[in-house]
Length: 282
Ligand code: G4P
Image (cartoon, rainbow, N blue to C red; front, side, top):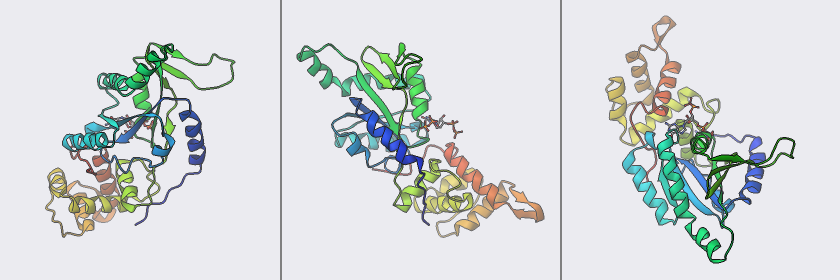
């Protein structure tokens, strides 16, 4: 199965991202902690060349904590600091500010040595749709001491949020497009809900999800949640049928409602009802 999706407005988003990134010192890249590779746009390395970098492994509450730790080390080995986060929690977001200081320490010290006036680090948040960019910016700016930027009537430009004396954040995130030439990446992004659900049928998606669960040792989680017997060699369609029956997803004519059961399985995963499950490991 091939997931195909190339929205036209992405070219425009990429163009503004290219312009915006010229204005900043630091690129804060948000990834989904459950699928850090699939949710990463590979162009970011070229886009953010010569910038300070910080990776946020967001939605860490939905990912396996041990695997997330391994991802933090993985990025550290590549020379990029990564922080696991639940962007909805203001308290945990504030720890990001101190990490930004650490990441940009070199710049701050250099400015000082050159006798330059200490200027706040300018930062942009970037990531694929639905990864939590707006939530993250809102949580951060809840702590903002002031909003800076253009006054009404002045030509529309970039708005900066002053987070503290040391950090200014561009208030519009850079939207990156997921790249999914690889079928697995397309599926991972569909499982977490980063690709519109009209791109791939829910029934097909649930089939692929159950198949993935069979291959990656997640069957016990499914069995336990839905109270079904499941084996690796079972046909995923049969398992979805059993789940529909167990969960009373029945339509007219007393037939199992596969559509309804499929949506339920996918929503259960997206909302962490199977527990915190990572789909990618370093
Ligand atoms: P975006 O700007 O990158 O497109 O993402 P946005 O902030 O709009 O967040 C997308 C959804 O993800 C939101 O849910 C938001 O609450 C949720 N979210 C953001 N960060 C986290 C996190 O760290 N953990 C969890 N569990 N959820 C997070 P929503 O608007 O309610 O959408 P939905 O959940 O109804 O799909």
